[in-house]
Image 1 (tube, helix red, strand yellow):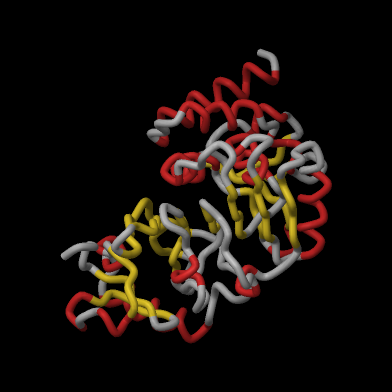
Image 2: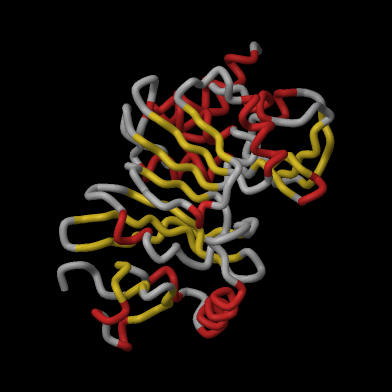
Length: 278
């Protein structure tokens, strides 16, 4: 089987397993060589059958995670989750996308394939050395810019879609108000152990709707999207009710909500059980 055939088979498997509806997403995963965004082999790989080392690129084309920065215990995550989430983000051709937690650049390349040459992908990575590796790997994708910076320092959000790949405890103060009409943001809200729920936020005419997408166990964000005090609060919420985040239906200013509908709050905002318009 050729490398192209291996990737095609991999993408078809992702489409079925993740319930991907947009054939463009499957096409992106089929076209991007995963090994381009990894350190030299042999690669440290972990999957359903356990951990192993391999220099065979075919071993990368399954729902496995691969070590990219052992010193920081950083991994290129299992692709099935991100195929599902990217599908639900509905990334438009020509769109402007923000990727927080670029890692070694693999998902930035997937997103670049979706936005095409008329779109823009801005990929942020807090670790400068890893950001430089991603920048080098992504040189063939002219629509991608890689910045070594903390997402919490962003002053403006001129993006149609935002994908956060690391566990956060909340959004910076100005972010909810800057989400443009129709914009979508997907991010994992997680406690200290890395466990939580990946939520999809969408700016609508009457506010920000929230849809829980998936349970996750994921690496924590570095910097402004993660706060140790908020982490303790979220841990308390999840300890009292591990299903709490699954009931989130909207993100609203705290002063516009009733105590009985509040799930978890941060920076003056509340994840609420109350759907928009009710």
